[in-house]
Length: 261
Image (cartoon, rainbow, N blue to C red):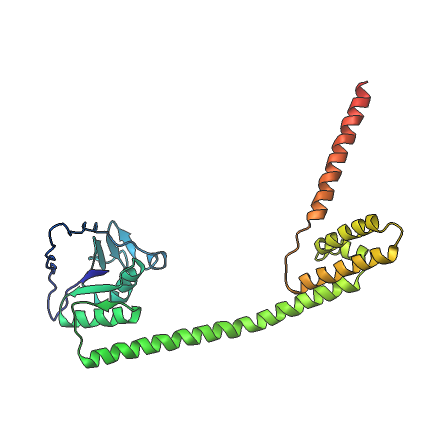
């Protein structure tokens, strides 16, 4: 998608370029795309003061830094080009056409190259191409440093989190069922074990050894989930609380019924 970036500089005033219409063959004419005014992305909203489709840096500016027009971005300020190209890229532009003097075109080309956009109507000198390549290399190296720093910063936090989870898991195994049920950090995990205790007793009413094996297997399984950071919802606890609420409601209803007699 090639759109227009216009401007004027001391080395030459920009003129609006009108692209030559393609000669369409009969019956093959494509419907024209409706020109769209570029939108301002959230990350750039704080850099400008918007009045209609005019963008200012400060309230003291006499002239707008940028004008947003259908399929066009207009500016006379070279310093605004990096942000203008960001707006173009955020709006899905992959290439641009430049109107303006040589100084403006060079600056626009370098700003576009830094953002990965191509320029359709400007052929830079080899030294300008080399400068664009240097800018791209620096940006790539900066991104690598940021990525490496982010990975380095995360490593201690991840190690600390893993250590905390392992400690919590060990505590779960070392404490009794009653202690885990009272432990704010482990009561949800214990609710799963409590459910297994009830099921095992019902399954093996005359064989406490087998019931104990089922309970211990569940304890080990829940401990592994804790160590892996798996979030455990206290479903059984909520069900028990709901059951108690129903029982209380029923008892109250019966009491009221008894009093009413």
